[in-house]
Structure formats: structure tokens, C-alpha cells
Image (cartoon, rainbow, N blue to C red):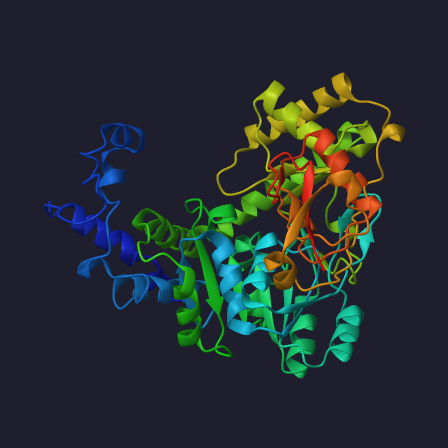
Length: 483
């Protein structure tokens, strides 16, 4: 990596030059540098609204970059070890969907774990590809699905030799990593592309002694959430492409759905954050790792909680573990993760990333401080002392692997009927049901609804999980597929 070149931020530098020119705007956006919307200017500040501008010659165009955006994307590709990089302003959702739409056409098979983000299955709805799920092993205590094991992938490939690609999470929301190098080798031996959802893996490209990243492992494409652990603005992301994929075709796929009015606030934040990570990422993520390990040790010393880490590695279902992830099992103190999440926010003014039925995730990144970690540890100790209950009354938390009966596209676009949730057992789901975050569907279109799944949904609702995906905002009814 050329460190001298990485000191530049072409989009940011072009915006700064533009801002000093005092150009009179007769283009969009209509707020005209904030003058037409004083409350917006007051909220965001003069500098921010002054660079919320439209594409123009000196600022390039994201749909067809030829100058400063092109240069910024080339610097990002170099920093991340990719052949090509696309700046994405629709979040990693748009990057993931662009990967799938690039690799798959209607009727194509894609091999993937079922614990994927909803954006993956949404892409299958759009393109008509057929999912072949490699249901990962489940940790029955923690209630989370683990990594994709090579023997299971090999079996799926043997049974579906016509599949066009394999998609894998690196890491999962909880920090679990699969054998990415082994997956790439196996898939490539069978002429299949490897797509990697690295929404939670930006730091893997810059931190030392962390799990392997997608580009280093030889994957063909990877979606990277710069705004999560990389420090850019929310909704900004990267799509990385290796030389095994035609990047010009990927560009056409992206432009099917990406906005033609890209936010320069998002683009410049990607540019500045890439520069920051290229120059200081190794040092920054060493501190993140240190803070996470400190927090893990302190929380485990409280008792009752289990902040899990590298001790889980078995080189099979947990090939590696991202130790920057502070995932904490709460069920042994008699509280669901979502209950601890609510208590931290409502009673202690601490906002963590998410809580599910049995776990919480406190996201630690380059902006955290050790005093914040200590406050979190103290609050968790307090919650255990004041609010703990008998865990024997709690529901078993095991992740439920669904059964796919109809393709997601067919079920989603079919005629459907609204049926009371409690009466849907044995029917085929026609919509999504999920807790968000993390956005992994409990049910997706085309999957069998079982009594066990209904019980799980009702329990999640009772505990206060944010339930999304259904037409009925209260999730009292589900849309079921009419055969």
C-alpha cells in the first residue's frame, strides 16, 4: 500500500475547493446551501449544508465516476487489497444485493447459511435465485448459529453441482468466523464464486491478529460496512471486487437500483474514513481489541454473564472468533438479552447495539473510551444485583432452522391471505418475520411455519424485541402463501 498516496482524500479535497468558490446554485438540492431551510442549517451546521450538493463536473458522478470519485475508489481498493472498489450510499444492504444480483440470475442456485441478513433473501426475491441452505451447527446454550463447516459445504456442492456461488458471513453478528480460506478453495475448485457479507468486518482489513478478511482469503466479492467499525457516516459502505469478476458488469448491476443523487456527505465520509484507516487503522484497532478483551474479562468476573471469546474456537463450526465483538450471554441471570438492552438504555443511559432472546452485543469501535467500558461493566453488575430472576422460567433459546418449501420470489409475489399468527402452523409464510437488529429472519417467504416458530415469535414479542417485516405492524397476523 502506498502510504503517501493514501494521505489524499480526493472527494473531500474537491468539496473543500468547491466550498471556497462561492458558486451561486441554480441546481438541486433546493435548500440552496441551507438558505431555504434555516432549521436544517441550524441542526447540521453551515459547513455540512454547504457541501450537500449535486453531482457536477468538478465533483464527478457516482453512477459513472471518471475523476475524483474514481480516484477515491482506487485508493480504497488499494487500502483494502481489492482489484476494484465501489462507494455505496445505500448501506451494505445495497452492496450485498449487488453481489447477489451480479452472481445470480433467475433459477440459479446459491449456497448460503440460513443466518444471513434479510438483504440477502431480499436479493433472492428480486432476482429469482434459489437458496440452498447449509444450516450451521447451533450453540444450544447461547441460542446462536455458528459458522459454515467445510464438510457441510462440500455435501451441498456435491448435491448441487449446478450452483453458481457460495455466500458466507465474515464474521457473524456475534463474532463467529468460518474457515474462509477453505470455503474459497472448495468453491473455486467447483467453479463457484464466493460472496462475503462483511458488514461487521471492516476492521479485519487493518487490525493485527484478527480473522482473515475476504480479499486476503481470495473471495470474489465482499460487502463492507465502513459506517459500522470503520467510522464513516451511517449508510455509507463499500463493495470490493477481485479480478475474477467483471467490475464493469458489477457497475451496471449497481446502477439498476442505486440513486442517481448520491450524497456527498456520505461519499466524503467514506473517503476520509478510508484515509484514516489506511494511516492509523492498525493502531486504532489494536486499542479496540484491547478494550474488548478488558471488558470481556471484567464482565465475566461479575458472574452470571458470559462474555464469550476466543476460547470458543474449535476450528470447525467456530473456525475463528472476532475478539473485538463484545457478545454477552444473559440468560443465566434470568433476563433475556432484550430485557438487559432495555434496562441499560432506560435506567443507565447506555445504548448498546442489540439484544435478542439470550444475548446482547455492545459494539466497540474506534470511537470508544475505556471510561465508557467501565460504565457498561458497572451497569451490568448493577442489573445483575437488582433485576436478576430465576432462569428456569425462561424459554429455551435455540436457533430454529426453517424449512424452505417454495422459492422466496414465488412466495413473496404470490396471492396471500392474512391469518392470525396462532393459526398459521403448517402453512407457508409469504413475508418476512424478524427481530431487528440483527435482521436475520425468523421466517422468510416460502418457509414452513411451525408451532415452535410461532412460540418463538410470541416469546420475542412478549420480551420486547423489535419485530419487523410483516404487513401487520403489530404482527398479530401473518401473510401466508396460497398454493
